[in-house]
Image (spheres, rainbow, N blue to C red):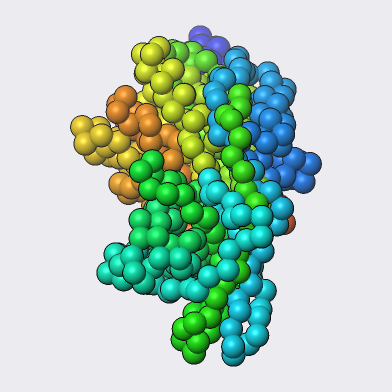
Length: 471
């Protein structure tokens, strides 16, 4: 009888222990909850709609850029996180002006208007524009071979195509973007009147792609623009039949003095290691010719969603989770440089900095970048997490470029992580009037936010020392 009574007394204790063990919060369970929260209750898509439709293109120095700073601050403040503040910085103020005009003039066709846009930082043509013969090149080094005698007074047309053989379209972009940045000063060295290049995109369409370029102090400035891929093919075809064809080009851009702006920063303090930071980020600014939906509205709202998901699920991270909305990635990276300067001055210990700046497409994985001393170690730490994220289609973990803004943190010992979605459609929209809200798929955007939040949770929970699947 006494043994039966003892057994009855112990049963409730055994049941409680069993239930506690059964309900133990494993990493797998919490990651599932993160994805559920993002897919069922996500706010990123609605936030993106407002950013694109109510604010729109937001190049640094513009009223829209100022609106986006205030918008980001208010959204993050409503999340009731531990800290939200604006980090001041001075930014460039370049204005496109009236719509650019371009016209091909040839004895074979008479004339044909074509779509062109100024590259960021370009000077204007004069009031009446430029009309000059066109010389087509495939590579910038051809300009030097032509020499000043042939180039003087001409418009150089770089018709270099994005290489379709690359699986990752960012590799194709990397092979061409240097021509966009350096083409105008290279052409100006030999007396060219202007420089235009084939837009950086795989798809042949009527949308010209803008993007930044730079002048050099000791070389004259000439106007620089991009022609749509469709009209680049047209111009090339006309030149093959009529080498004397000319192009009329009119642009109205202007550069004003720098203006004050700000990064927006918010964080949830770590419970155990508050001085160790796991950062997520994107950039608020976007080119003025579109809505900046994929570049980089998607990255902005995904980064904010990480904090919202943590608050919604009551996750108290062991390490501080910080969200940074950078200003001026597109034409100067002033916000990123100021953030890095302040972080170094404060001696902050950021273990990982994640940037989402490749669009709101289906998530695939992550790249890891940093100094030689840390990149292998941090990549190995990330790869240990692969079994936890693989059920959600996350399989790509490689060394590689992480992001324009966070690259300035590498020399501070930060492991820089690039969030990698599928890249195949990105350059159909990048820097074009076609980068609009309707081009973003809600579910893909939410899957990306969940993937970032899951990685941030694991890094904040385990740091560099992941050993298992339970908390």
